[in-house]
Image (cartoon, rainbow, N blue to C red; front, side, top):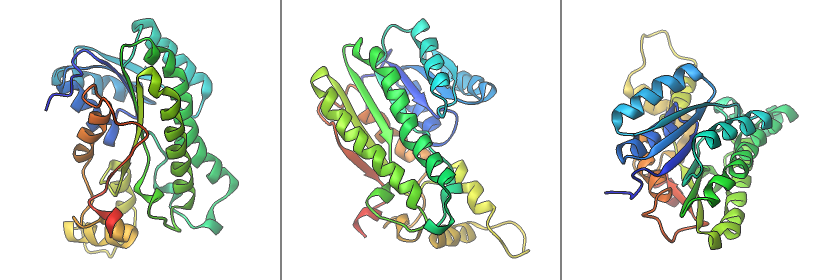
Length: 270
């Protein structure tokens, strides 16, 4: 499937790991130009080389701290110094599983962190990207929400509240920008075996019986995420959601806006 994004200019936050990295590779294989944003310049340089080898004619390295408004401003000024337009903004950044905690365990700082890294980071990048998107002949924004917005979990209360706010903001923004030809959507992943999830599972207590087997990991995922594993009965892989993200953030998507696309192995229907 061709996404009609050859030479399109695509900005991806969180592009050095997980869903962001997998999505960047989809765009690179389609011949898009990329601006990849993350904290580590060293890692960004490594990924940029991978993306050029995969087919991207351009991969801009843009260090950023999405929790700092000044850093976001500086990052987009850097992009604007290289590009006069952009077609796509993909926001994949969010806090790790350190926010897996019940209501009584969460401090004000935990709630502020959740809202800052999930909601306000996307607000900052959307606002900063709008001049570039409005200068292009077509534009798309895709924000990564979460399946837990539909399936509440007491252990994900701060995370889910912030993701729900992100989904609401995205739907409102889609109304604002539709007549300008900028389509805005969210993708809501179920349980995916990202590096964060792998590290979280690895840090869980274990019996001293050697390395964990695939069956051990599956049982722990079931323990932590339960029905969120869906009908498929396993965690997804980043490369399984990346094409869906890229499809919404492509010229091939010419009508869908204000949508929240579940990619969750069927958990939304259990």
